[in-house]
Image (cartoon, rainbow, N blue to C red):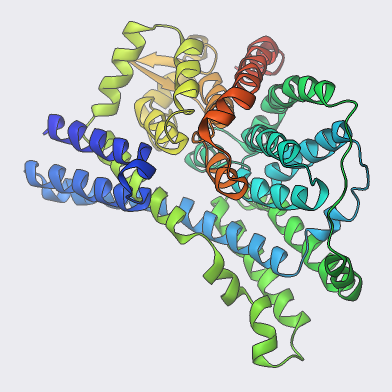
Length: 459
């Protein structure tokens, strides 16, 4: 059975990686892979009740991530429908290309921590189209936006889907991930930003802001500002809500969606149905990328099948025996995320390394409490199995590496793929002009994390 599951998963992974070559959407490949893996497991297993219980358990965790994504994407669409991001655009007046790199990249870095790296990349590329006319300058800016958005998403629990997965799964906490990952993520942006801004230090550009955009903002300034600040405020409130109530993050996100939805309805209550339609949450829901949500569903189902059949734990043991260095293992996984999607990589890692808690592993958890001296850098061994505590070094470093490693190649992250289509950037061009910068960015931030970890270690 395990051989069939590995074969199915490998074929599915290859289909996802070579989506453009085989002309098959990666969502279809992911869904088929997830369903086929669980089908094989069910057919080979004699304990059908156990298989159903395991599937229900995993689906409960997966649904939390999907509801979170749906809520966040709808809020962003509502802000965009009301031209809310004009609040940012109208403040950028410089003609210096070097200064624009700093302004746009820092905006992308902090904005992706609040939204997500994919949405931020789309928004910031749309903004730079109005700020930069030169095609070459705009493409380099787009490459830097990918680096900035992925770096910004790595330190925030809601900035990147992989960090969100670790947060929802209990591997990291919001406060500690921000505290320990902010500096490495910022370093990973500053290093390439210094290089590229120095290169273009004497060049200038002309703005291409449309007059009708400025006119629209002036005419609807109150509702534009209101939707922008309400939307961003509710997204920022999600980790606060989880901390106060201890409810899953998707509950806070759905609360935020409800509030933004209500405000948008109130703003346009006096308009007729046809005039209100583009500004409604129903219309925003029709505009979100549902295929991405289904992609996550399929790939996470496939990963959960490998976890339930203990294939991932066997892979973990093999990596530990072969590499035997936690930093190197995580670093290699981060580099792999430049080639394949980081979602299944993180999902696989979560399955490979058991999380110690009073509910997941009560015996191991009790042993750790009564013998705290065995805990070293957030992990301990019980009955020849290594367990990792919340906020362990492994999970924090994993969040950084898989979040920023995808910038090395343009196909390594959702943000990169989106920008590739928007700016018509070729794979080889990106390798020649951006990949080395992204590689320097990756290692600079990784070294920064290793260096500062002892200052923030909680174990």
